[in-house]
Length: 254
Ligand SMILES: [Zn+2]
Image (tube, rainbow, N blue to C red; front, side, top):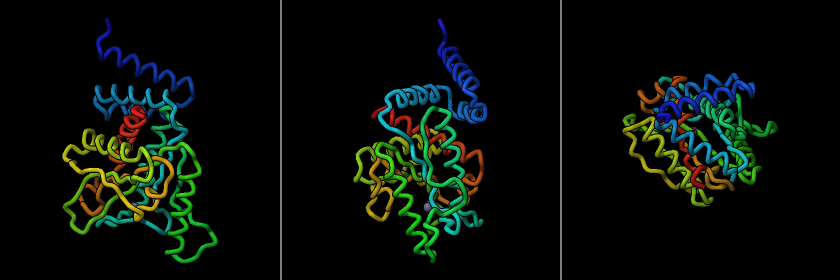
């Protein structure tokens, strides 16, 4: 009889063979990193919820939004690192993990640009147009799950840790927020005891989205230690994997 580890190793080798056969070799590194980061029992649970999520097919795609871009840098660390590049990098990693896992994915931007209408002038109007266009992409799909990736900021640099925001306007958003928050606490930030938080109209995309949506504040750029971590590729990868694990948990339970 196989031990649990042998069973697990067998499943991993099957997955790798699948990727090799399907020509998705560029994703192999991502997958191996994913295995490396997560503990075996966590991988096992994540794979199970991931399989359930894919098999259930109660959704069409995952929409990932890295806000800000171009002239709008978002919040900035004391070292001058803008949020926009970190959001973009985490989105790209999350997108790749989702693709290699068999999900359909759509993103709102894939480069350092604001997606405002080009005819619009003035920073305030461009920001407003950018938000309108993101919402239009969010609501262009009838059956998507939407994740907006931000970094947080506060006047006191002591605060750190991820926090998920959601609106009660859509069914499912609170459950999604809770699932992702739980994974941050169990996988990436063991000291994180933050609660998920309901938002109002001030979080425009969360409130007006027609699909289950969360705003994932992954960490505080105002905290020097967390800002330094968030600026590394390794931590960005781990953050993407953490969001992925929470998303799988949510989808598996739908
Ligand atoms: Zn932001």
